[in-house]
Image 1 (cartoon, rainbow, N blue to C red):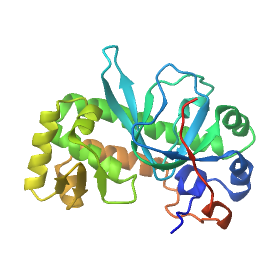
Image 2: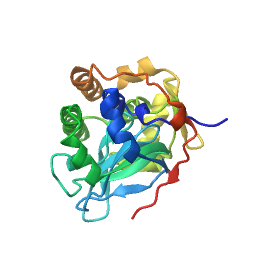
Image 3: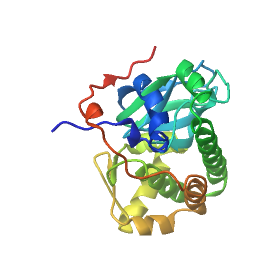
Image 4: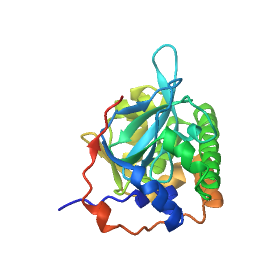
Length: 257
């Protein structure tokens, strides 16, 4: 069965009026991402922006010793490379694919050009940037104040909001790296959640069995981020028209320049 692809699977692109979306559509390139693809690193010049549709990415703060910690998750609700549109040329974080899937690439040149010609684009990206900053700020507080178990619940919920299934293919080592904690801490936290009947973890796949229960176990950080997004983006639609023209589009495998 042929998988359908449409840029409007991304909520930001779906929110554009039809005539404004039509200006951008010819410059959007369908890309297939695999796990651990690094789209850009902190300090690098941003050549492209990415609008995820089914893939999700981690925004990472990298340290001099080679370690890193996740400060935000971006999926089909947002854009990777948001610092382009205010006029920035360099990345403030590292963007690494967390859940493989698809998205659309738009060159930084065209994004800057279209911001001046597409009336809805600038305010839409400004609102999204505000929610991204809120997520980063809340994540920073969460890392400092909350238990590993609470952080794991927050992290699982943020990712599940951005993937079409109720499960994640993820090793404990990878999750530990995202949260900046020891793998043994993730093992123990996942064990407690599994005993409580909230998740099932087996062979590198985490399946959520009881989402309401998982939300109860999470700290307030998840709810704060979710409410902020809802407050600023209540007009974003959750459904989209898939055009026949895009349905059979052949994706390009992501490759760094």
